[in-house]
Length: 126
Image (cartoon, rainbow, N blue to C red; front, side):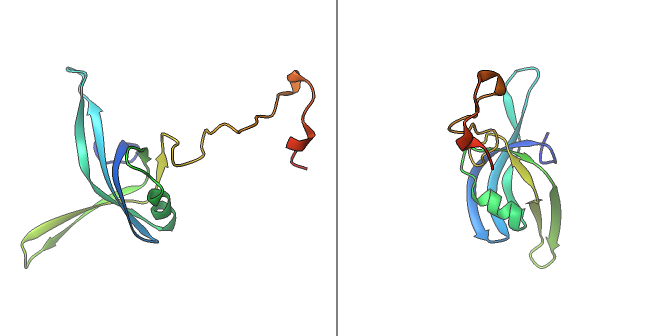
């Protein structure tokens, strides 16, 4: 699967750099059909770019799983040093395990359904 849109990745390290960039160390694995074991497909540092992506990434913790959204890879060659640099960038992502977001979280006091009888007036929005 590798580093691409829609890939699931595990976060290993989070480093906030500024309001518009956060550096993540992530890995992407795939299952080997012959052995049934997971093999690492990608491992490296990815820069979450943009105010929304950087602040969301800064709230991640080691062990969180994310689904990559808009991503980009660029390379730059330094003629003087004779070195090629590869930069991995991420502009959006979704948190999959819900530990860093409130998606899928159950309310503390769920509202009973209509079939259960009276509705508690304190839970009404008006």
